[in-house]
Image 1 (tube, rainbow, N blue to C red):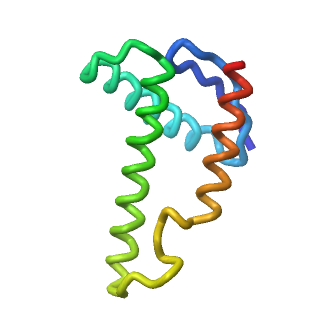
Image 2: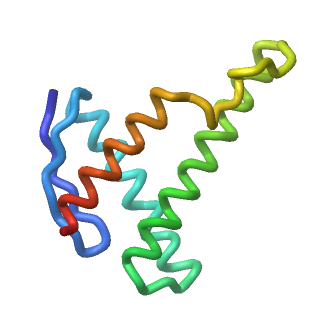
Length: 105
């Protein structure tokens, strides 16, 4: 378990997670880089819009990677193989969103 300071898009808060600090730093830095690229390339100045768009882009990446993993198994898609139905990922995502919402309030 580790605590990490998040400073992204003008918002600062501390996040406590079960992962180790180096991993959390990589995740934070990746998210921060995606947000910065969105603001530079898309000229989006509204920080909430940039944060939402970053989340959507990262979710898109995750979905595509999960689809690749399913296809790499060589199996045809089966009911329940849809990455969007991954309940654990959904639970974790909702938990992170709730924490961010509380920190922004």
